[in-house]
Amino acid sequence: MLQEEKTGTRALVVTGRIVLWVVVGLAVITGVRSWFWPSQPAPAPPPAVKQGPTYPVQDAQLVATRFAYSYLTWDEADPDQRAKALARDMPKGTDTTAGWNSKGQQTVLLAQPGAVDELGDNRARVHVTVLINVPGEPAKDKKKDPAPAQRKWVGLEVPVLNTAGRIVVTGEPGIVGVPASGPSVTDQNTVDGDVELSAQTQSTVETFFTEYAKGEADSVTAPGASVPPLPDGMTLQGIQSWNVDQGKGSDRTGTAVVRWQIGAAELEQTYRVELTRVASAAAERWQVAEVHGGTY
Image (cartoon, rainbow, N blue to C red; front, side, top):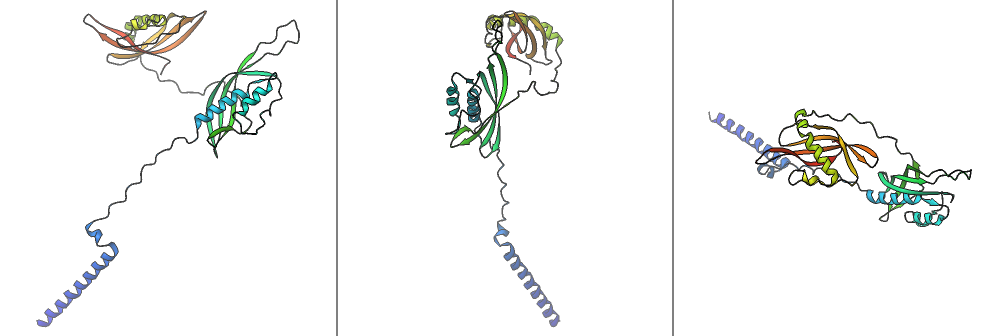
């Protein structure tokens, strides 16, 4: 019996030593500190923030528009004026007389900046839409009147460079066409009309537009509303149509198609009119709270 006890005791000692060495090995691998203070998960990276445009778009548009005005304006009686105007926006030492044969006459009536296409390396291309006035050709027959001047829209694409804190035009621009129409669009959403309320408020809207043209809209608008008057010379010819959108509550919106007379001309226009229900001790009535041109 004594021999068996010694054998069992020795087996326990051996087992204990094995367990001890396993624990020591784990401590070396994982670190004792992590047993008591588990490591925290790594923080998530901060969300990416989209940066705004780095190119000075507004400056590029300003310079390109001014350049387009000077570039498409010329007068053979004073060619130096055009050259001096172009020099403001081109690199120092550029020959600003190049590209024009110093003949003819043309003026710019209006120049409007458009899209700026970044091309890399601080370069960009700016589209400018320009309204030019071209004098008519003199009549070959002295008895006939000269041809009338022509006004037409043209596009001008201007190459620019952002350098030394300034935008400069780096080369000859190019005249391009102006689209004859806008792109195709899907049909606009239609809203069901409230036939009953449309009929009920027809006279309210007619009265408003009559006073609107007179500059006296405040007399027929809802309390607190302020509608700036229309220009002088507009006379209401009639409300072509008035439809209030389906809805609920004391604030409703409708669409009015209105025909105006301006001098000898008649012009049809569309408005979105916001109505509000005003209550008093005597009765309730609908009045105009706001009016905006165009549909939504």
